[in-house]
Every structure is written in structure tokens, then in C-alpha cells.
Image: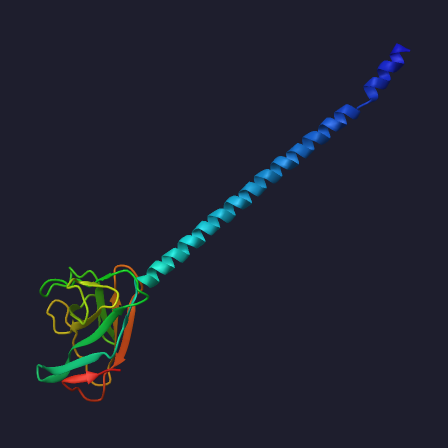
Length: 202
């Protein structure tokens, strides 16, 4: 009788089956928790990167500037040929953004320019041309372009450190104003059919 009871107890594996089921369920819960944590972490990381991109874009936009009015070109004679000696245009700060540093380089040197202005046409590219500024209207007498201020920028094509040569009638060119922060301002113009002392390029 005892032998039969022992055999029946040895065959009854219900406790072992329940333990295995519990282990499997715990394993599923752990795996699901790890997976959920991974998904949440990835979502939070993506949200942070998206937020950084939005703030970076806003900062770029807030540091931008735009032109106000026309661009003027100034003609003259160099070595007996009529050519363009320089151009000027008016800049304003857009979107009530942060101040833009328009401190020009001293003398003929262009290496000290905080904001860089480049020139490109069909035959040449000058990465850093010489330029000067004249603030007009309301301003606080510094070199920062701030809200409600206007500045006339004169780009000198005759500067010995970075000359621009050979501009003639119907020539197209690009002026690019690149501040330290913010988007670059690209101005593309075409010269008229006659080189005058003053030419409105708009």
C-alpha cells in the first residue's frame, strides 16, 4: 500500500508544472517591461532631439536680417574701363530677434570682420570682401543691428586685400551676408545695360 502511494505521489507533477508556468509568466513580464522601457526611452530621446531642432531653428530665424529698400551700385572708371566700384543696401533685423554684430574690420583688412560678406559672379568668388556700415535713423551708436535699427552697408569692390574686378553691363552677381549666428542673406542682382555713377538694381 505504501509502495503504491509513493508511486502515485512521484507521478503527480502538478506542482512542478505550476512552477514552470509561473517562471514563464515572470519571464514574459520582465521581457515586456524591458521592451516598454526601451520604447519609452527612445521616444523621450526623439522628443528631446525634436525640441532641440525646433529651438535651434527658432534661434536661427531670430538672428536673421533682411534688406529694406533698393540695392544701389556705383560706377566709375578703373584703367580706362567703366566698372562697378561697389554696392550698398539697407539691412534691418527681422522678427525682433537678437542683435547682429556688424563690426567691420579695421582699415583694408577683412580678417577682423565678425559678419562675413562674400561676392560671387560667373568668373570669380571673393570669400570675404571689404565693407563698411553707416547707421541711419534711430540707433544707439554701437555696431550691433538691433530692433528698430537700420544700417547702410557699403561693399567696396576696389579694396586691395579682396578686390572684385571685371564687372560690366548685364553681369549678374551674388552678395551673401553671413552673420555669426542665423541664416545667411543672399542677394542676387544683374547690372543694367549702361554703367552709370549710381544705379538702382531693384
